[in-house]
Image (cartoon, rainbow, N blue to C red; front, side, top):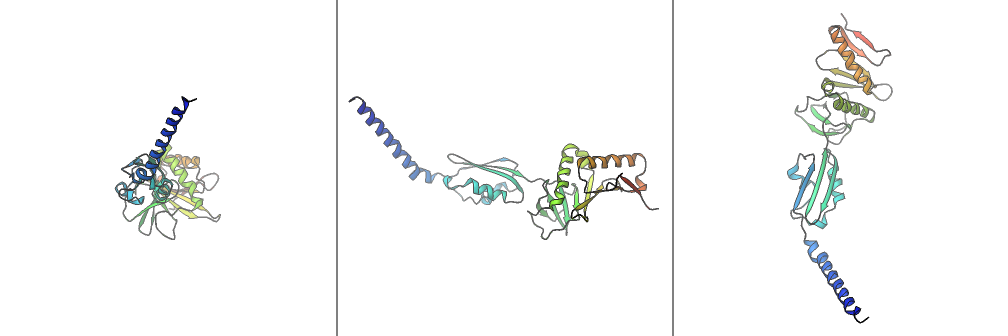
Length: 249
C-alpha cells in the first residue's frame, strides 16, 4: 500500500502539470495563434487575390476567432458562388473550396448581357458581348438587372434540358442560337427555338423534354436533306402530329 502512494502522487502531479500546460495553452498560446495559410481548392475564384477581404479576414487574423459557418454563408451569398466549403486545420491553415456558377446561356436585356447558369440563376451582368457563343434566352424581363436574380419557376425545366443537351450532345447544343420565351394562356412560357445556319424556327411550346428536343434536330436534318429549308418557315411541335408550315410565296 505504501508503495502505491508515491506512484499515485506522481500520477496526480503529472495530471496537475498537464492541466497547467493546457490552461497555459488556452489562456496564453491559443489566443495568439494566427492564420498563416489560406488554401484554395476546386474552381479557382475570379477574385482569388482578394477572397480574404471578401471573407472579412483581417491581416494576421487569429485562428480561433474564425467562424467557418459564417464564412461559408458569406461566400455562398455571392451570386457567382454555387457552393462553398470552409475548413480550419490546426494550427494556422484555412481551406476554402468553391464551386462557381458556369454560364449555360446568356440573356440580352436593355443592352446588358446576363450570364445564366443551369439552375436559371443570373450570376453576372455585363455590357460587353463576351459569352455570346452561348444560346441567347430572350422574352423575359426583370424588375432589376443585378446578379442574384432568377428566371421564373416555370422556365427552370428548360435550363435543365439545355444542361442535359450540353452534356449528352455538345454538337447539338452548339446549334441553338436563340430561344425566345413567349407567355402562354396557362401562366407559363412557350419556347421558340432558332437554330444556327437555318432560317427554320421551331415552335416547341412548353414541351421541353429531352425526346422533343432530340426530335427537333432530327426533323431539321430531314428538312435540310430533302431540300425544303428555303420553303419551310417553321416546325410546330405544339400540334399533334407535328406540323411543318411553308413560307408564304
